[in-house]
Every structure is written in C-alpha cells, then in structure tokens.
Image (cartoon, rainbow, N blue to C red; front, side):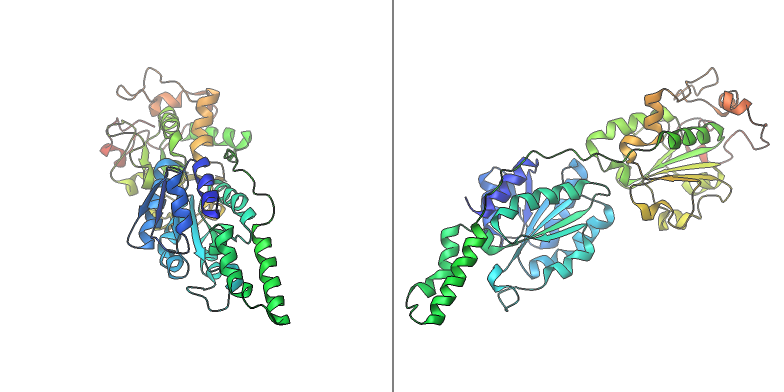
Length: 410
C-alpha cells in the first residue's frame, strides 16, 4: 500500500464521493488509490475548475469537497477558486503535489514555495514529511475545514510519500548502489538510505471515523434578550443568508424554525429556496424599503456588506441583531444592538424559541393564510402590556405589500 492508497482510505472514511483533479505525475498515486476505493475521479481541463467543482459539492452536501492538483502551476492555477471558497466559507480540502522531499528548494521540476502562495487563502496549511503523517494530517484537515467558520485547507503531499517504498528506494539508491567506491559515494549512499528509512519509518495509523464538529451555542441570556426584542417589535424583518446553509442536511430544521418565528423573511445567497416557492412568509421584492421601515432587523448569517449598502439599508432607529460565525462580520460597517457567534442552522433564536415553546401561538387575529400573529394580536401579549403604547403605525406602510401574505404579518 502506497501513500496514495492511504489518502484514498481517509477520503472514503470521511464520506467523500468525488475527487476533482487535473491529472499530473506528482499526484497520480492519489488518483489511482481513489479510483480503487470506488471514489469517482473527475479529470477536468483546468485546476481552477477542479476546485470550483469541489466547492460546489461542499455547498450542496455539507461534506468537504476535495480536489487534487499537481505541483507548481497546478497549485497556483487553483488560487482563484481557493479564494472564492474562503470568502464563501465553504469546507474544502485541497491536496497539492510537491517535489520529492530531498529535492525541495534545489530546482526540481515544478518546485516552488507553495506554502507561501497558498497560506493567505486558507484556514490551515501543512506539508507532510513522512508517510506516517499522511493519515493524521488529512484527518486534521477535514476537521479544521468543517469547524468554526468553515473554509478551505491545504495539504502538501511530496511525491516520494505517495509512491511505494521499493520504487522510492530506486529513485534514491540506484545510482549509489553501483560503483560506490569512494568514501564520499558511500557517505552519500548512507545519507540517502537513512532519508528513505525516515520517510517510511514509524507505524501508519488506521483512518478513524470522522468526529462530529460541535458548533458554538448561544448563552441562554442571549436567547432571552433576542426573544424579548422580538416580542416588543412591531415591524420586524428576518434576513437569512448563505452562512445559515453551511449544514445542508439540517436545512429542513432551519426552515421549520423560520416558519415557527412567523417573521417576514428575505432569503439571500445559498439560502434562496429554503422556504420553497410559495411560502407565505417569504418576501421577494422591495427589500430596501422593508429594511428602512422595520423597527427590528434580524440578520442570520448575513454581513452588512455592499448587498446591504454597508448597513445603510437598515434604518438608524431600527434595532439590529446579528448572528454570524465570523467574528469580523458581526459588527462590520454597522454596530448592532446584539451580536453573537452561534451557528445559525442549529442555534438561532428561532430554533431555541421553538424548542422552548416561547414563540407565541396564533391568536384570533392571526393571519388567515399563514397563521402568524398580526401586530394587533401581538400588542395584547404580556410584553406589550408592560410597555407604554407606541405612536408608530401598526401596519407595514409599503414594503410588505409585495408579500404573498397579509401586510400585518410579523
């Protein structure tokens, strides 16, 4: 069993079904090993296409996408798609070929400092130095790609770790084995033999089952604060973005939580389609007007970037609550009233509210189409009776009239 087989065994154990590549000599054992294990190897015409395809698989399945590219130009060609995966927060594993360990930095074929090129665009970058490191490093790569804020990772696999030991010994020892008569020749042969023993020495661990990555959860006090803010709002709006769909298998649970909240909802990015084609809570048009008229805006996995005019689409008087895995995006361009870093798919206020039975049940004044409580019904809640009456209008002036549901639905 060679290093390529070991990598293929880890991919199989991690649930990977597809390996995207542009075939090259530095990575051929990975491709042959993957095919032998039943993985579908898709050979494309440019490395950037391989990484884009792996990114797409990750977004649709939740399993980190995997691409293997050859050394040097194969790695540099992948950078555009690698950066795209980083900005999209897609879990992706890039396997990069590399020159033999003994020839690193000596002008070998396609030998460049790949780590310096790749490191700014990934969460994690490592280079294997021994065959025994391939399995644990690749397993760590999958764990890091899925944990916290998901993103791409890079594992450099030198070519002399991927082929079988007998062939690598020929590479390093054939010349010295014939005519090693001088002291210098014998010393060189001893050094090369020692290097090969180090490459293949040590026990090779068996691939382990992938461990579930536990997301950060919000504090109960944060949940209570968010629920209180929602209970006081007259014109709340919910925005769900791509980050909320980083765990595609739980999309149905997220959709149920959104429906339980009963808020007018806009979907963006990868969250489009979450509620289906005809859900009564989903708004599709005049988002800018709705945000300006709202008195509370809840952003789930949505940054205040150019798509929200850097936060200026949201009225300055509105209460802003942001939930985002990425710390830098919690307060980007706009300081919210409440900001937290739980995983939107499993720990959003709506999910917790539905679990705790805190979402108000529809009353007599609820919407006849969607069952959500209207503003007048919410005004009779205990939270509203404890506060002085507001002079603000109890109906959406203009934005919500483009909804498929009644304009008073909140």
